[in-house]
Image (cartoon, rainbow, N blue to C red; front, side, top):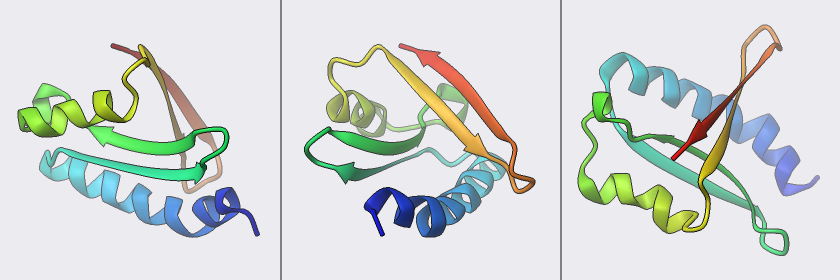
Amino acid sequence: MTKENVYDQQINPLVAEIIEICKTHKIAFVASFCLDKETDFHCTSAMTTEDFEPSDALKSCVKVLFPESKMFQVTKKNADGTIEVAMICD
């Protein structure tokens, strides 16, 4: 089983729960998982917009993790199997 499979099957459902709890209670967070060091493949979830009232340190985490990145793809797999994708530009 690959790290990506482990993430998809075991970690992603937990992260989806965390995201929903954080949305409900406006809790800022950053979580990043390295699934392939060679290709620098990460799955990162972050809620650092101002409506979540993140600290400056937390807001900077995404920029530290991905210093050259200007765009992020956000993918959400819903309980019914549908997938939502959003692009976020910095």
